[in-house]
Length: 274
Image 1: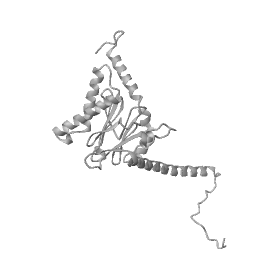
Image 2: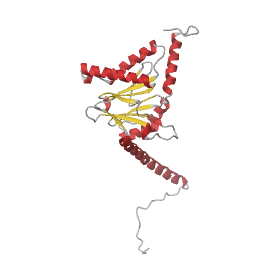
Image 3: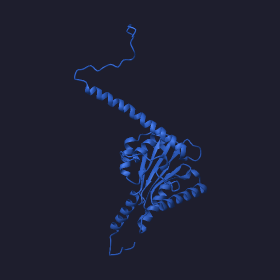
Image 4: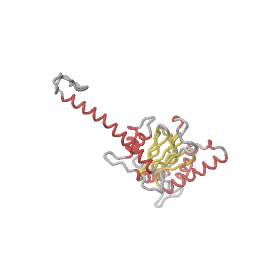
């Protein structure tokens, strides 16, 4: 380990400085949400670029998401693909797992963090879809090689803590894809802000119902239709809430002891001919 200019610094101080440097770089980007839904795992990231992807496929059942410096996490993605291809070809395709890839990335990032002058400014998620929801796996790997086995969802980059808090308020097990996308976009959008249009979103799924390759990137008309379904579901949820609020307001305006009015079920024929 090299001694910085200007004198001696303790190993603890050097590690703290590296960690702070990496956190600041990661926080400058936009957050990425990875979450389970009824039929698999959903990836959502605000990303106006059509060429520089934050979300990618690693293997048949395994997806990859990352934030931070593009050249650094792209080198990790390519290393993961090489690892998966070699192991799948040499042994068996079932031997390539999300856990194995997470361990590979953890070792690589941990070595860079401890031995290099500059740590990688990246945070990544490796997700593997199983035959059933309880078999799904989501691993979050940080810049120092720490691995976290996430349950149901993970948020990386940007204001991850705030986005994760908003996502927890909307997340539940078994959400259909449109509702899961709506929850992810609501979490990624600042309160009072506007949601990004389809052209500025990168969305993909690991769909357990697909044959062979489970990874599917959602773009163009398919994404537009999904966003429209999410908006319709959001408006449908608002309407009952508005009706309930209106009913509660009407009851509050009634004087004490008053009998609430009964809504007529239909027109009554009085026989007067009117």
